[in-house]
Length: 223
Image 1 (cartoon, one colour):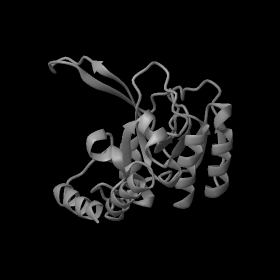
Image 2 (cartoon, rainbow, N blue to C red):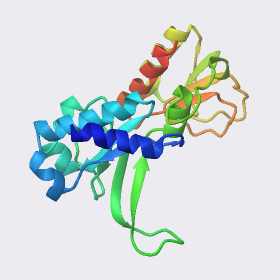
Image 3 (cartoon, helix red, strand yellow):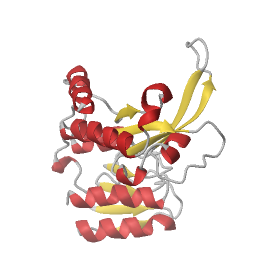
Image 4 (cartoon, rainbow, N blue to C red):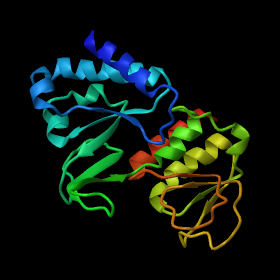
């Protein structure tokens, strides 16, 4: 299949390199890919992503909301992160996505002309390095050992309780949503974090409680 050949060629180009963000499959060319929509296009995407993921890379898929809604069978691609291109103030895409491209007319000093602007909802560098993907060595367990779970948003209590039970460590509710200089060197913080204490071992924060719990379950699986 052509998708397998493309995946192997792509891998030959990135092998040996390190990437702090997911390796993304871009599907949006109507002339080349549009006639394959539905089952065929979904199978092509899934084949490509499975091969690259199998080689140790954190993968995802990029396209517009229209393509995700009308060209791809997203229930079959739910294992992969979505980079959504929807240029507006409030995206209408109903699925989950880790990165949102919200504009194609941005301006950045040092770059001539318009640039795309994106917002990431997950700390991809931390996730990817922590599990040893994209060319990085996995962080040793001793480096992320914790003795306390901190959470500051009641919406994140469920995620914090899951972690607390799995790791056998106590919870601490930080009502002020800041750590006020207290040294929590072996703490894991769940959910929205607004403090500036750099000694926290790890922060788990999704774009909403659903995403946060998904990330928490990945952490639990390593316990």
